[in-house]
Image (cartoon, rainbow, N blue to C red):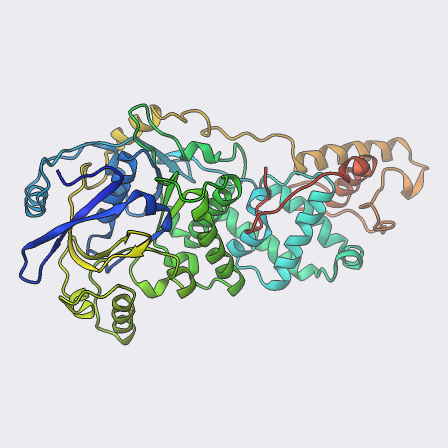
Length: 509
């Protein structure tokens, strides 16, 4: 049998005459050196992803991957002998060819095809939130100020309505706040509020809230020693590609923040497959791409491998591409100038094989065939080989709805994330204190404007404009006034508080 300890059998390379050359492996000790799987539509990228995920799982490595078309869900079901699978197994000398099924946890931001996935507004942080809203530089600055105010005054930002409440105050008191933090224009605040409304209509309210996803729940190992495979249902999520990319980038940043340094272990702790990777980089500002590159480079020492799956190697910036040691290149088409450039770029990234011309072979590869170069020895890339990818052990194609439901019900995280928890946070605190302030004002009709009115500490007195009613149905000015009056009494206890923001702006728990 080709499988060897410490390695994942990827397939068998061929000689120029079509005969089998040798077996090709991915060494587990280099699994955290990241990777790239590219190729045109229909060339076999998803099956390659499945083969790699199965190999890591068998080795006890947890896996997280997105299921764009629903096909990857079949990894939870045992494979069946089919003619084309048996033929490929025979061609590459895979004996015995055994079928298997793998422990899977299904996740879904919308809670329809898996367990709910959530994070809080605070944990997302201003940088990623600005990316999600396609915010301008001025709007991103307003978001940073909002997070600063929330941190300094103990306001928990958990869901969209919490952030909306704080933005309402900032819009009403832009001039006072500008004297402390720099220019805050009402137009920028209004633009952010409109963007939040768009996010809500796109379903982002399902993503923000509690209980927030615990990283430990995507790093489980089953009782039989297989690494748990977390499969994110992304077919509906892909209708909002910016939310998809931002979510996966947030997850990557959380892994970076929470996991300890482990150096170069014998095998990774987690492997992260980022399908449709071009969505991460499309229209991304330079600062965000620089930080992605930094996280990809540094997360290796946390024992996490990141594998980008995309159609074109040009989809990945060169600075990130340089960090990807394990390469699987399926066929590319070369009809347009950009496609021809992509072929040449892909060919130049491989360690040359004198037996063939990479650029010519890339355009003639068959389905399920790829150019493969993995790290070997002391971490140097192997000579590229034309390789027949092995057939997977699990089912190719989706599970049925009944099968999916049974797996969800039997999941080790069943019941942990399926019900929303709406604990007391900024919105609830502000609303409750607004009522109390209103009652105090009503009880003291001769007290003038001083009774029950307050401002943020250090921002001076409030004006006498009548309170306006926001979208959420509460009086904005009175709410924030009441909350800050209470905060002023407790601000001394907040001085020693150390809130450390991570490299991508997400807030540590």
